[in-house]
Image (cartoon, rainbow over all chains, first blue to last red; front, side, top):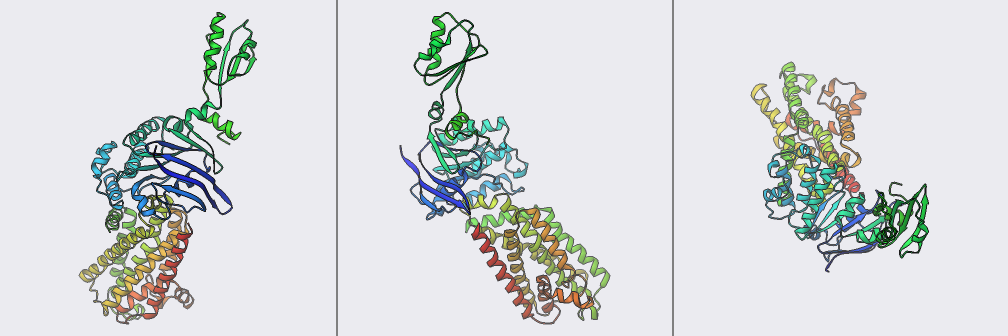
Length: 300
Length: 245
């Protein structure tokens, strides 16, 4: 796997506030890499440093083999960018925007073809302010892809979108990757990171607290299952492989464990001739993984 | 070069689509000017520095367009770009802030030149306007004034956080200066203490620097120097603030 972004020991403070406190990670070519964390965790500062939009205080950064501070102009021709909370002039038309970004990027991108690709062919003369939230995001993705960059940075792309528009934006991000473009995705939405990313770095207070595939991150926080079975003695479950804890509350048996515990518990019940209708398993999501890692809930 | 050219052309189209800018920097001043020219005619008068109302007001109003765009139009536009992340977005695509500001200067010069040209043509065609005595002096003062007020506009945009704030401050500055700068009532009929306040206002320097060579009082070196000082101080101030961000 070819490494195209390497960050180590990145530090940045604003006055007394430490925004980034020793972040390090690598991104491989062709993957969707997520930086996930609550607002103010240091994600945006990190990707801005990667694009040469912010000076770092300390640390090493290499994007496509270039230092963003020393070779910012050269680098920005090879990367695409969608910035958090950035807009276009209200009265700028869609085609004008695409042509403007092609011109400033110094590329021969066919603006019309690019817009057609992202479903904006009938919007050439529409002004930016007249677009819906989803259309604006499609335009931003199209603009980020002007000049066929090798890597795109997408910062909080779906904030403010309704659920349906979020889902179609996720499809677009997958399409970007299918074109062979590496994606660095910044988000504070757990579900987005879980569904889209090949690997996720969970960022909190300017540090990476965990970095792995979403499946591996959530596996660490275990699995819960529950059922009711009058007359069944749940004590026998405690000896099963992978079971950590068995509790009974108001007749409901709750089991917590790791690995394929659900199948093993079900096997015990089945052999005993018990088939509870309310047998439920609960797979933890990244929200619970975050709680397990930081000891804080996401919304704090 | 292609970036600068496309960006400038795009910005010009955006200005042409902005009704507020067009009304306040072009239509409104021209309408006011017509009213004044109808009222005062062009008979030489002591109150109008010895010339007629038309010869007095056309250069003064042309200068006022510079002040209006520099104090209101440009800072509102640039502060809005800053506030809404347009500057960051352009920078992420490799457009430097200097390029964006250069395009704004070009756009401002075009807008004020169109406004001034409307007034001058109107004056010549319908109100018996006398030709400028020292045309080169008028053009020089107009250009230096436009650059100085563009720099002042950038300084305001750098200092003020939002387009709304820029609009409030810009309107306040413009109207508080307009009436005592000599572009409203002639300064000769104002009380002495108001005149001495006016002596310190950049808009007074601007109006006088454009008006003097037009009506035959020659190049006003002192006022031009004052405008250059305004240009340098504002430019250094805005560069300093931009660096800090």
